[in-house]
Length: 267
Image (cartoon, rainbow, N blue to C red; front, top):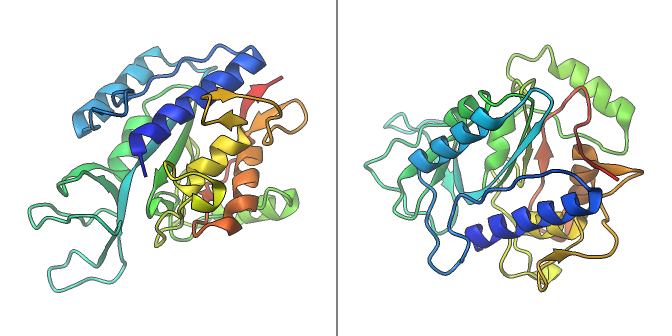
């Protein structure tokens, strides 16, 4: 999977949909956009980018952060060293020099920890307005908790009932500030997208780009936008589309509950 290419295509898809909706959207890709000599994201560059977003954010705005990378999570059971069993991508090179005890984190090619889930959420909470985090990382379901809700986008009553129960569950994540959509459950690796005609993206990102009407060959949004419902695109409609298609891959997307469905675009 080309993490940089996924970020580039997602940014272009958002720009294309925004143009169709006549919306004012600013996109920034942290890594180099040539895809050939991509600059890898670091802890510092991520923190700096989020700080820039926070400085320019407003209470009536929406900030969407998409992250694609190699994720890991820690099993609840502990080993002799007290760090627990680590689940990571197949080609991950874990190093004894780093402590991987965080519930979720993203690692670099040499095994270094780029950022933990806790640090990422702390940084995002500094942004004003609505904040959305979309992660295309193995095991990123850990971000929304092992006992969090998987929303049924077709059954509002069931989702509302689940949300009410979740409010009184001390183990559930606090999503009052940041709404999260992840590519996989806590102990899952991302599915491949070969059956969807994409070798560059994971199944999750390939389905999301497809739902946004993005054509990878021309790098433009063309024709009908499948995730659009009524007069717009919301987080529930995006999640619902990906969830309906997830049977074609090994991934199971998760989304944290929110009292109000976040509107991304209106037409």
